[in-house]
Amino acid sequence: MSTRLPASARREQLLRVGLDVFAHQGFHGTSMNDVAEAAGVTKPVLYQHFASKRELYLALLDEVGQRLLRAIAAATATGQGGRAQTEAGFRAYFEWVADDHDAFLLLFGSGARRDEEFAEAVREVEETIARAIEPLIAADIDAGHRRTLAHALVGLAEGASRQLVATGDDFDPSLLATQVADLAWGGLRGVRRIGRQPAEVGAGGRQAG
Image (tube, rainbow, N blue to C red; front, side, top):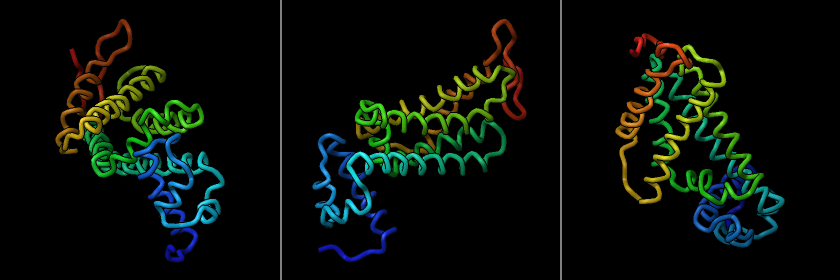
C-alpha cells in the first residue's frame, strides 16, 4: 500500500511514473492498471486525479512541454546578443534531452504523432518554441519568412536529439549546442529577402556578402 500523500504531491508522483511507463510502452501498450501498479496505488486513486488514460497522457505532454519551454525561455533571456542567445537556447534544449530521454521520447516519439489530439499538443509546444526564437532572427525579412526559419531551427534541435536518443549515444549538451548553433548562425547570416543582398542578422551582425 502506498504512503498517503497530499493531492498535489500524488499528482506529481503519478505524472512521474506515467512518464516512465508511457515512454517505454507507448500509449496503446499501456493501461491504467500498468500506471497504478507502477505507482503503487489502486486504480481508484489514479482515477481521482485523471479521469482516463487519454487525460493522463495529455497532462504528461503538457507537463514535459512546459518544462522544455521554461528551460529555453530562461536560457535565451540571459544571452547577450543573438548568437549567444541562439547557442544558449540550443544548450537548454540538449540539456533537457540529456537529462530526460523519456520526456523527449514521450513528446516527440511516433506515438504522439499518430493521434491527432496528441499531435496537436506537440505542435503547440513546437509553435511556442518557434515564437520564442523568432525575435532572435533579426534579418530584414517578412514575418512569414522569419516564422518559417524559427520552425526550421526547432527542427534542427529535434532532429539532432532524435538521432542521439535512438542510438543511445552519450553526448555533451554544451558541445552539441555549439556545433548546431554554428550551423544555424552561419545559415542565418546569409538570410535575405528574395532579390536582395544578404541582410544583417542579430545584434552587432555584419552584412554577409
